[in-house]
Length: 148
Image (cartoon, rainbow, N blue to C red; front, side, top):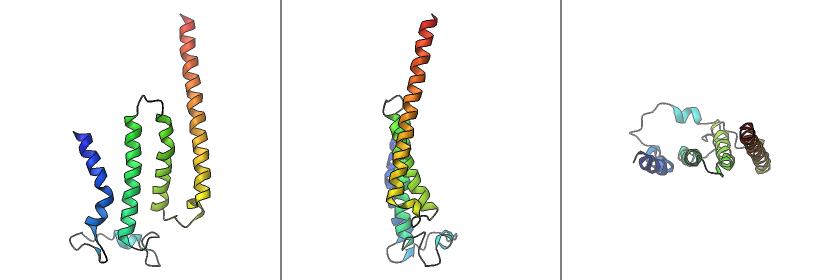
């Protein structure tokens, strides 16, 4: 039951921007002003590279939903043979979230070719690590059988 509730709450995460902001007007009047919007506003008047706070929140919550969902899938896939591969999209989603939080969308780290190279390198490292660990595990099992 708790998992179902968590999934429902996660599904609503991208729509929090509708609760926090009003289209064309900014933050709703009942939301306490704690200065987050001022902190995130850059010198051009944009919010972390986005044109409005509403768009920033939507993108942030969407990326957060993807990241948390992938972590949940990774946890639920315990014992499955494909589990190690989930690290690739999980790290990609985390990287995207980090780029957004650090306001690095216009830097070289956010360009498609850099992201593609990072994805390929991470994929190769994860696959090699999987097969190395699997070989170690098989060797340990074989050594234990030979010792009896």
